[in-house]
Amino acid sequence: MRVLIVKTSSMGDVVHALPAVSDMARAIPGLQVDWLVEKNFSAIPAQHHAVQRVITLQWRKWRKSLRSAETKAALSQWRAEMKQQPYDLIIDMQGLLKSAGFACFAQGPRAGYDWHSIREPLASLFYQRRAHVSRQLHAVDRCRQLAAQVLGYPLPSTPPDFGMRQADRFWRPAEGPYAVLIPCASRPEKLWPQADWIAVGRHLTSQGLAIAVMWGSPQEQQRAQEIAQATGAIVPPFLTVAEAANCLAHAQIVVGLDTGLTHLAAASGRTTIGIYCDHEPGLAGVTGPGHVQSLGGKGQVPSIQAVLNAMAVAP
Image (cartoon, rainbow, N blue to C red; front, side, top):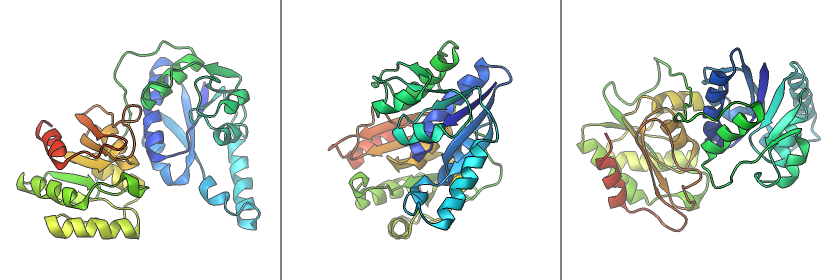
């Protein structure tokens, strides 16, 4: 049996869909899984042991210049890749009109959330199989329930297994134990006060840990360097998603904002403290097999003491 997963973005959403693939692989012997994802996040499904092929697209880039010759050529190549292999089922885990549209370019019956379960109800009209899944569940549980219903196996009662392989060679700030700070996010509303990051960094340094401060853009690099200068931390060179994932997977503790890298750290089994300043963590809090804790919420910026307390009870 061959299945295509459609979960293109964002990074945290892609991470949250990984356990559903682990469930499928255990429930259906010989299952082959392909995954359609935005190119920037392709390293995440590629690290799952049960994913055979990752098909990438660059819709965020293409939609800005749909009439250009370069975009037309890229779209033509992508459509050809989508037709290479027929599927027994195409599962749209995104639940949007655009993701349902992407699914239509593959060969095979489509499945997804029903009208009452989906983010954009009209997208459910594109599916031949539909599942009713509560919208009050965590994103990980929604994906697991969707896969179980449309593929017809019992929903496992086991904790979510993110199934990620880990590399032996990777960038790290020191040879000994280290921590990672992730003080950058996609929107300024998500940011936590820089003075508090400095306090966390100094606390971790006092515990004998080396510290890496992650970044992904020139503006974020400047913020990371300012925190590093005040704490003795190390700012890594630019890391790809795969390189960052491997660094996170071997950290002793990760403290990060509500961003994809923080979810990736939790999925890798690291002790992870998630800081939420502009979003309720209930349905998308950090989750994983290690010690995880989500602090704050919409209009509830967590205090430095709350974060230090969470770190103190971490193993």
